[in-house]
Length: 100
Figure 1 (cartoon, rainbow, N blue to C red):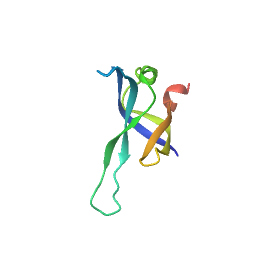
Figure 2 (cartoon, rainbow, N blue to C red):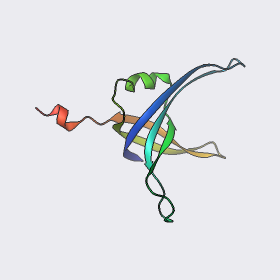
Figure 3 (cartoon, rainbow, N blue to C red):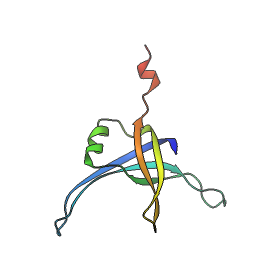
C-alpha cells in the first residue's frame, strides 16, 4: 500500500549483543491517524516502522524533520504473527523550492 506520510523521527541501532549476535537497524516514526470509528479516539499517534539497517539512517539524516515522504507499507507474517513493514521511503521534494 502506497501512502504519503509525515516522518517525525528516526533512530538507528547497531552493535553486538552479549551472546555475540550482531544487530543493525533503523526505525522510522510516522504520524498515523487514530482509529476514530467508535468515537473514542481522535488525532494522530506515532507508529514505529523498522526500515532496513543503519545505512538507511545515513540516507535521511540530512533532512529537516518532520518531512513528508511517499512510503510503501506491506502486511507480512511469520506464519503466526502479522505486522506491517515499510519497504520503501522516498522524501517528497518541496515544489516551492524546485520552481524557478
